[in-house]
Length: 561
Image 1 (cartoon, one colour):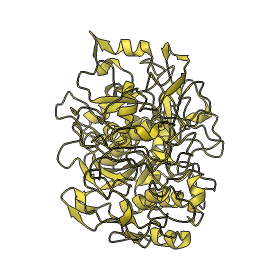
Image 2: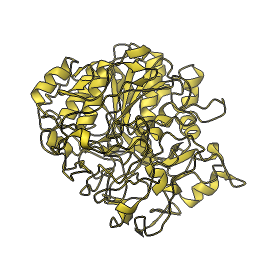
Image 3: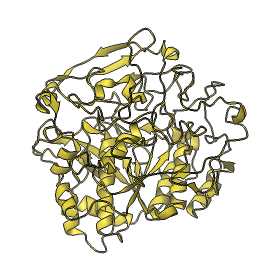
Image 4: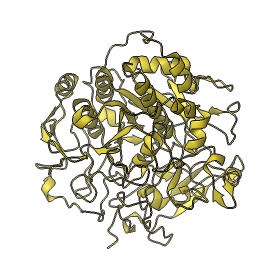
């Protein structure tokens, strides 16, 4: 199972939590509406007996009560400061992208005509909804949907969870109006590589397959994929030198693609970054907290950001607290945490989230700006440049890495021939797929059987040595087949990659053809294992600023019809 590193973080180092009962999960009635327009009516958020009961332990933080009633890490004082006559003003909100880009000096960079144009950023996540700000022609290209939603047109490519769209908005959102919502690299193109289902479920093999596909198809139909945004990871129990997920990101890196990976949300005392951020080849990003003020002098490393150890810290940090980006009406997070919607936002378009996911998306956008300004930069040069020009915090501590990214300074520097200080050997990728899962698994909702062992998400036997050799040669995909099984079609229809019907048996031994697929909504099924806990995107509890759902038992999504 893949651990989402979005707005959530684990309980380690956190003094409050909102723990949800899972007994009534099977009665939930929620439609997957990731493709709905921004004006759509969200699914019901009834607190009746049908919904999970919540019992909250909250503490006051920065003058506001955090817990399940205050999503996104924003205090009451900060909310009040962001309103004028009861209406939200982005320029008065430290978490808005207008404030983030201004604080980072990106308005200056944009004035220099660096907007990410000509750069494609692959977002490996839960999908991207075509909401306003991401709906311009050619803005989003749909790669193959490798998630468990991908077998029907109604859920294919759509973001039923709400996380991928939030990332996409931060990276490259742009409204038609010049005064509207603007991401970090507003003219960058986005490649939607969906691996997470509407309930968030994903297996490391799906992410590995997505990385392999991006490498092989990075120049398809005029794309120029130079950046991968990877805002989640696993708590792998094997070193990066053998982990297959680490090998997959290294192969992308070696192909000229900068992989920006979230450090994790387990807290400053976490002894390790998550996989693949722990791999020193890639650009690992932690989060900085603005603590509710416009001044950067009091900024600190966010308490939820993984600290790591002297062996491996985040490379840099970027804004990650209470970031406002695009909302997906009726999505999982929107339905279960409507308090994440921005107070006073008359448009209903925006949603808050905190985490190293947001910091990763900010950094991915910054990398796109650098690569437009200097396309010849290698991934090693980008990483070294960002580290060399980062701004250490006044409140310095090792968990900040080199400091807060400073793209304006990086653009002014752009050292030719800049290299990393030492040469790092590649990992082998020949380790265990099961070890990479770190004890977290998806589950077949029809049979109840966990996906475990050396088997991928479609049920094929995993041979790490054979895969590593093929992936290293950029030959892991053969048409629409990966690891000996057809996952997707071959070729494109407009902006969408062709789909294919899964055949053969799933990991449970039941034929894929026997599984029930809904065309537009989930009907009494969830791919999430009830045993997931802690830092996963399927935690046992919602933590005020997280995207993680209450634990689930058996089946969870159900048709609204």
